[in-house]
Image (cartoon, rainbow, N blue to C red):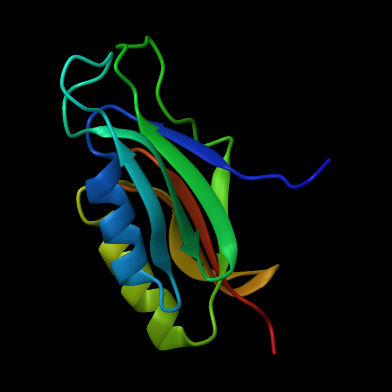
Length: 132
């Protein structure tokens, strides 16, 4: 096995989501985008396949050209360990804007500060500030 890469399927807003995520998380970037062209199976200009990194973790994503009866589920989430209280507060505030809170940001027995949210794209995030 060469590597394992999380794969996210969006419905028309993959590039917007990648831009959003890479703007929020320092040390992140979009590494490649292949777009649908004219007369291909997807909407022209939408993301056929793309890769981006959040810190050093690579992700792949697409814009699905098929409407499915499912979307993202909170049972799979991106777990992000933050370096500071300012960082976790900023990320929590940004990711909850237009999203949904599943566990409010707070002090839990397993983390100095923790929050679990689903962002405006439906992707689930667990944010933690570890005990010192």
